[in-house]
Image (tube, rainbow, N blue to C red; front, side):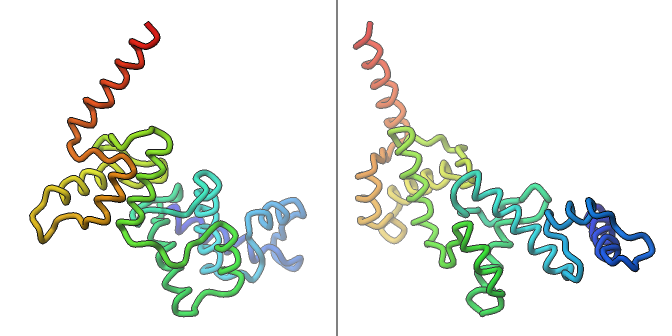
Length: 203
């Protein structure tokens, strides 16, 4: 209901830009609307696009990337992850305008996303950089919404799996080089032991 009301309100404001309108906007009102990207003659589709772009820009400013999960919901209640996926599809099909491509490039848009495993490994590297280990709790979710805890758990399951579903040797090596402990309980014991050793050093 709120979205319908907003669209109706925006249409009304756009018609009031003209000095010949029944109730024209004041100069201050026009400036405020222009600062929000509302312009006379702009289509509803463009307004909706600019609104979602604003959400993507805010995400980029906060996290420094556009690695947005497919199910990520923006503050306006719309699926921002799905919107970005549609922009990539539009780009591949040549349906995006030049100004849209330019604006998205300006906030770090990656037009060809890495595969799912690479995305998980990238988040694991960032976690290791911050924590110094990969003892990621199962329920852990990265600041950008990526479920790293679940991904790490899936890698351990694949490591223990039968030959057909077993994690590829190259990936096993990559994770081990990063500090992966395949037994989650062992990883926690090692971390606890390290903490106790550090405490005894200063006691």
